Image (tube, rainbow, N blue to C red):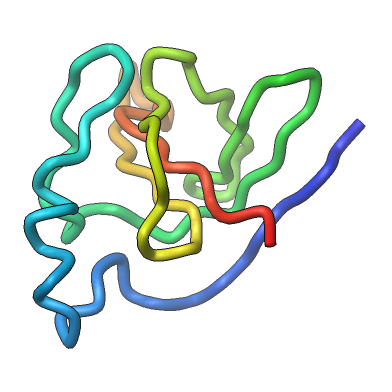
Length: 101
């Protein structure tokens, strides 16, 4: 069952809010990977099913590994994904779930 997905077009980090710079730099996944400073994150189209997240990267749905999830409050509202490519396929380095409101 799919519960939610969000699509928004915007920049990953609003540079009009420098107060969030430190927060973005502090983000890391459950697996311990630092997610960077927010500049290389994309606002994510995402959904959840069976307790697992997935995100759309390069037009493909990609499962989010549990250790790539960023825990804690989301101060920007919309979901963010830090993606990469492994063996020519999109993959998730970090995923910050969006607000369900």
